[in-house]
Every structure is written in structure tokens, then in C-alpha cells.
Length: 196
Image (cartoon, rainbow, N blue to C red; front, side, top):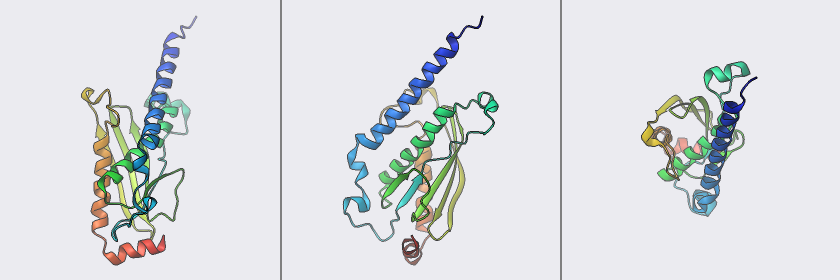
């Protein structure tokens, strides 16, 4: 007879991890109301060089062939939760920089965004993260198409709230987006806003 105890323990651990991720999402989204009121939403005047950013939920990168999930170390429910969590963390990095207008996490891509940043999780196992990030402005010009990688050590866990062991990845993405924006002229930025 098969001993179901290890499988039950794995399910309990997965359930606990999913609940922790959901709790973190709730804290980031609702625990800090001041973060929601930035840029245009707060009635502030946005600087001429600031663009509003749309961040759709990331593609979880789950292979269609379910038989490969175990071999690849992919737990689909956890990966789906990460796909919702990671754009929230990137949003926070963009807001913290103070260089952008309104930054929204969207349920799906909104083509009328001044700057649309999409992501695909290529690998995520708690020790290594690989994200494919694409950014395109409203005029159709591609800003980024790059894979970002982050690694953690045992010192990164347990994670201090609020925080994320891959914060440096999100900050790097925000920095690359800012570098691209700084290459744009005032007319190019105005054209992006006009098209959006």
C-alpha cells in the first residue's frame, strides 16, 4: 500500500506557500494605501517626462504538457500566484523611483497604455528567477526585450515584510526602463502620450 503522508505534507506546504504569497499581495495592494495614490490618481501634476505604465499579470510560463511539470519543478498554482505577485513588486520599484506617472497592475494587456511592460516567468524555484521582460510604448516602439536573472542565498530567507528576495531584479528592470525613457526627446514623449 502507498504511503500518502509525503504527498499530503507536500500539499500542505504548497497550500501554506500560496497563502503566504496571497497575504503578501494583499499587504502590498491594501496594506499601504499611500502607494495607490500616486501621479495622476492623487490629482498631482505629472512631470512632462513621466509616462504612465501598465503592467499586465505576467505569463506564468507553465508548459502545456502537464507531465513535464514535476520534472521541471513547476507547481502550476504557485507559478500562477507568482505571475500575479511579480508585477506588483515591479510596480512598487517603479513607484519608489519617482520617475513615472501612474503605474497600474492590469488583469490583461491594455494596448492604450503609454508604456506597456509585459513579463514571462522562464524559471522560478525560490533560488533562481528568470524573467523575460518586454516593454513597448503606445507608438509601438520596443523599449526592452531582455531576460533578467536573480539568485538568492539562505540569508535572503525568511523574507522580511515588506520585501522580496528578488528586489534587485525589479530595481534593475526599473533602471533599464528609466534609461530608455531618458533617451527619448520631449517631443517623442509627448507623441507617446498623444497616441495613448
